[in-house]
Length: 166
Picture (spheres, rainbow, N blue to C red):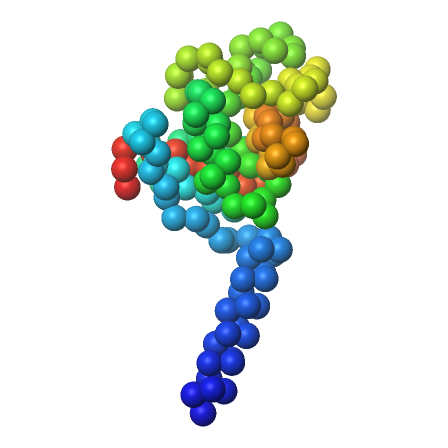
């Protein structure tokens, strides 16, 4: 009957929603979102990949790992990332051999390193090769911050930034 079909559809929809909200579906991605403030589009990819693999995947898709160069872009990033995610890679890195902990950070695009949103106490001394940036979901009382982390040792989500609208 139609009622029985509607119940199955509703049940399936609830199940899929539950899986996505619990973060169990590792291939879920958001549609690219355009931001007037930068004139760029952003696409959340759940990954998980190492930082180097995420960078290569972003470039293969025609973009680059997200660079956050202003408070406005930082706030916009909070809207792009699904609530269920905990951390994701950004396109910031510290070249090998750079004095620790706060020297030489740069964006994959070569844009000026004028804005940062480090978590208090970060970046810290180079513990285990912490030379790339991940951002983490915050709350109203604990806003999103950046952390220096080890790109080869961790796999996580990432955001691709594209020049222009998609």
